[in-house]
Image (cartoon, rainbow over all chains, first blue to last red; front, top):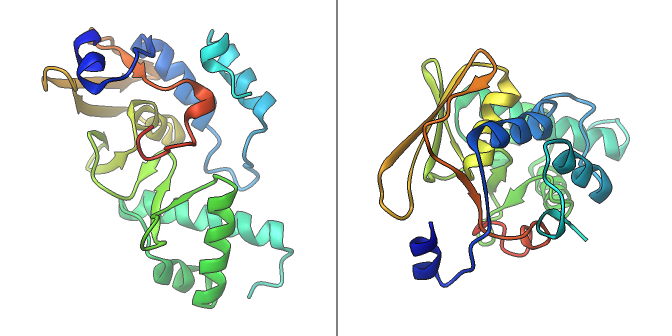
Amino acid sequence: MDDWCARSGRARGRSLAPATAWQLARAWYHDRLDPRWRRKTRAEAEQVFASVGLAGEFWSLG
Amino acid sequence: MSALDPEHALAGLRLAIYRFFVEHQRAPSLGEIADVCGWPYASVADACEALDREHVIVLDRWTRELRMAMPFSAVPTAFRTTIGERSWWANCAWDALGIAAMLGADATVRSHCPGTREPLTLAVRGGEVTDAGAVVHFLLPARGWWHEIEFT
């Protein structure tokens, strides 16, 4: 990962275990086919991130 | 044009886009959306621009046809989600898992390591994901995701 980031000229971001990424995917997309779905507010989105343990500056939308 | 208020009309159009993706495993054209919804083409185009501004969908910067209806990608990417006999392109690993989550089904996600080009597979079985020793990497901080959404 570090080699790829270096070749891309980008700083390394954040790596998630597949299980965590799956929890995030479920929390984020479980209701996308619901007719009542609406885009999350910034606070709601950050709450979703926090619910799967993703908090701090990297996961802040502000 | 539908007699519904604008908010409900947009919500209905959004859902029609997603249902088309699910059924046909590809993006609808604006013309196809117009046919499905029974709207004039110009109304569909305007509505899609509104959804794009709200970051609900992403339109191609040149053609103004559908580029993303997250988690779906309208174009081939490095992320492919398969459920049974059906497959869809996803925008990223998160979205590839998101297709499985959205459809509530066992799925196989195929991609490759960008560094080594080694094929990678994630399997969702019975609501759990197998750990193949891979990681899901988020390159950009969250506040930067929409600055270059296609890169993100």
